[in-house]
Image 1: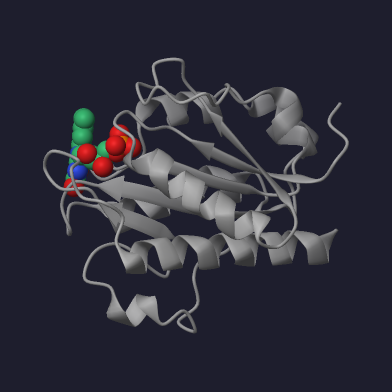
Image 2: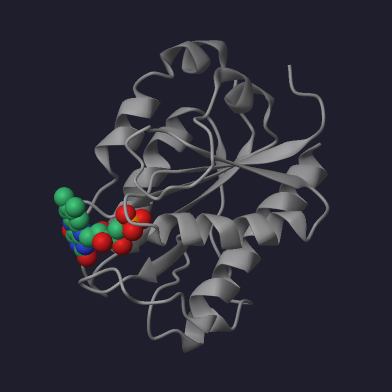
Length: 189
Ligand SMILES: Cc1cc2nc3c(=O)[nH]c(=O)nc-3n(C[C@H](O)[C@H](O)[C@H](O)COP(=O)(O)O)c2cc1C
């Protein structure tokens, strides 16, 4: 079993945008002195990352979870949905109850469903009894952003060919969310 405290940054990404968000959220977490363990859910991940598949031990032992998916017709990608449908054993055992959590997403278009995706990503976490957190408006980039970043979670607008870089606002909102998750996880112990 894993012993040192860590927060799980769980993602699925096909072209790398969600992975880029995951890395920024991990920076926010690690700025608070907690390890961020980045893990994916599918070997079909085409981002050529070195991140391993999530394990049962990761899920049970983590202090909290940040979870991200591309927007797929306004909801989460199938590999993440499949992953959550494999967690009945954790639901029955209450493994995730009272662990803090947050969500993040990337969509190709500005109004293409990223907020809807964040809300649907939240649902399995709530069913598992997790403590869901968003981004408070004390983060100034929520007011300034002309791309991604919402009170429901971090987001990125990748453009039609996934060519958009993360904007200053999107990065700032990721880091704030990661920091908030880490601070809360530490307080909850
Ligand atoms: C099957 C499919 C459905 C998609 N649905 C949407 C959508 O509803 N709205 C949107 O803005 N983008 C949509 N996209 C685009 C992705 O959300 C977008 O390219 C995202 O940034 C990909 O993230 P990734 O680079 O981490 O794979 C869709 C892409 C695919 C393949």
